[in-house]
Image (cartoon, rainbow, N blue to C red; front, side):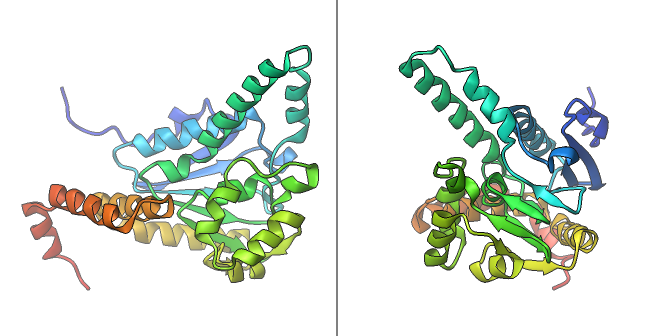
Length: 278
């Protein structure tokens, strides 16, 4: 049997019709939303495909970095597909309150797990946040490694406007990511809109680009830079930072990275470091 790794094949992802998956360069994969008519709103099939795609891409032995973006200038994602959500609620009619609770709890838990995939996998992710970024867009953004915005990006933790606290991760993850907790409370409790400059001030994004095209170009260059490093170093760095963001103590983090580096530093590392230009 051959030990050769099969190269990335975009055809392996054709079954996921709500996304476009392509290779930017070997090791650097692009995942794009593909529901332009709904401004990339998510229904259940969308978030289940999202989890399946990212899990599969992460498991490919060559993958080093993933870019998540929209192909349309008007929106990254408008959030939850409310029409589809309402139809799900209608399907619960006739169930007892206990049955309704179990069904809803299971649905929310599955939804949370799917959207949380970028935080859970070892591959770092970059998200380009353009145009409309409402509700679920913030849940998605909170899970990725690097967030870049376009100048026209418009954000809102919109859930409170429809009468619920956001429940797919933004309220749990954003406090560890942003530098102004008071402003985060304000946005979450009012559902107010904020722009790219305010997102940068909040610490939600690291850079603003003029438009979608320039944003994609920047993210491709950024991803290519990351992709040029050794895979075990990329994934070890991502996992170490993510663990601390997710609540691992500094001492546990130090113990974990000692084990990881001791397991990966060998004679090949010595050969590789000799070729590095600092």
